[in-house]
Structure formats: C-alpha cells, structure tokens
Length: 334
Image 1 (tube, helix red, strand yellow):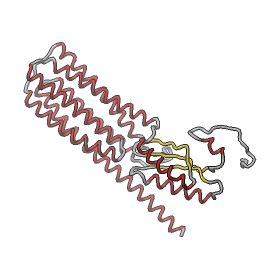
Image 2 (cartoon, one colour):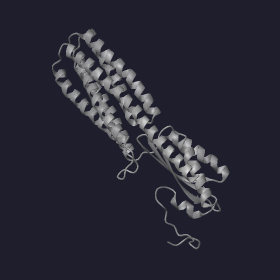
Image 3 (tube, helix red, strand yellow):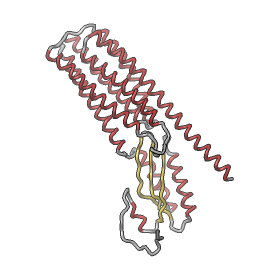
Image 4 (cartoon, rainbow, N blue to C red):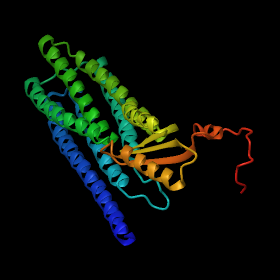
C-alpha cells in the first residue's frame, strides 16, 4: 500500500510540474504575439513618420519601439520565472515577472522624455507636414493591430493571473489611445494648417506615457514588497473557512502574498484540543487542498494547528508572536 501511495504522489508531482510547464509555454506564446505586433507597428508608424515628418507620428513610433523592448524583457523574465525552486530560491523564481513590468515602465518614461525633447524645437519653429493621408492610413493600421493584441493579452493575463501579460497588454492599449489622439490631432492639423499643434500633441502623448510608466513601476514595487492577493480571492477563501465553524473549526492569522502567478497563503486553524495529531493533520490537508482547488493558478497553502480552547493560541495572531505571561504548568519544556 505504501509503495502504491508513493507512486500516486510521484505521478501527482509529475503532473503538477508538467501542468506548470505547459502554462509557462502558453504564456510565452502570447509574448511572441506581442513581439510580432511590436515589429509590425514599428514599421508602419516609422514609415508614417518618414512620409509626413510629424513629431506626433514620431512619438507614436517611439512608444512602439519601447513595446518591442518590453516584450523582449517579458519573454526573458517569463523564462526565469518558469525555473523550478532550487536551494537558493526555495519559493521559486516567480517574482521575476515584476522586474519585467518595472523595466518596461522605466523604458516608457525614457521614451516619453525623448518625445518631449524632440517636440520642443518644433514648437519654437513649426514645420509643415507632408503626405498626411498616407501617414494617417499607416498609423491607423498599426493602431488596429495593437488594439486586437492588447485585448488578447489583457484577457489572458487576468485569466492566468500573469502581471507580465496584463502589463504588456495595458501598455499596448495605452499605445492605442495615444495613437488615436495623434491621429485626431494630425487630422486637425491637416484641416486647419496650424502646424504648431503637431508638437503640442506629441508632448501630451508623452505626459500620458509617463503616467502609464509610473503605474507599471508602482505595481511592480508593490509586488516585490509582498502585496496580498486580490480581495476577490481573499473573500473566496474566508467564505470557505467561515463555513467550517459549524464543524467547530475556526481560524485566524490568514496571510497571503502574490509572487507573479503564484499565490502563497498561510492560516492558523483552531481545532478542538482533544483531537489527535492525525485527525488535526488530516483536516488540515483537506482544507489546504480545498483552497488550492479554488484557483486555476499555482497556489501554496500552509496551515498551523492550534487548540481552540487554549487562550495562548491567540498569542500569534499576525506576523509577530505576542509575548504574554501565561500558565505554563501543562506546557512542555524544551
């Protein structure tokens, strides 16, 4: 029986590793899609800039170049985050995803500063624009590519709880909105002949890009500082734990953290003091498995069993143990 049980455990472990490998492979496929979109939009937007000489089109093209660098970084970090836990990184490498979005945010800010630098001389000396019809057509085509890919990345990023996909998708979606602003602005320039509007539009685009970069950097910093999992996920967990009270099982010290796709959850279970160690362990195993089954992403649940009728069980609510005087008559000595 022990041998058979060991075989089942090994099969479960192998299945889990294969499942995580397939999930990472699936995520990489979306990054390849983002890379292809970035290359296509760079070519289209820089050609629009080449045809027209518009600073607005140049700012739009430069942001697409940042998209390409960001997608390459995302691919590198996804490869790193897919590495299994090792002796030096026993909780895995999933936090590598946060570096990707942080670097992408920093690149966005640098691109925005470059746009402003290019636009200021055009405000001082406005320059006539040429071939606006063709430039607008190429820019519109690039925007449609970005829109489709952005929606795909955001949807799958949320579904798979991947900050890399979601950040890349939101960046592309921001690119779509900035492109729309540039296109509208160039149309106004075409209709009015007020060429100073072109660099002003470019600067407005740059300001919007800086805000997007700040959001990405802020979110990455939050993740690196062990941010909790989403409120929706916590509510799902607490609803389940609350339902156990009718079986005389209570809980406290529910703590969570998000590391890329991986969720880490720890909780203290308060059970009747007369239970055997085996019974408490069996219930803890069942509860851990039930919580892990709630989500379609990697989840690690750790539980700690405490007697519900012992007041000292409340000394360790939270991350730090409260040191209180208590009756130690029945406490074991070490």
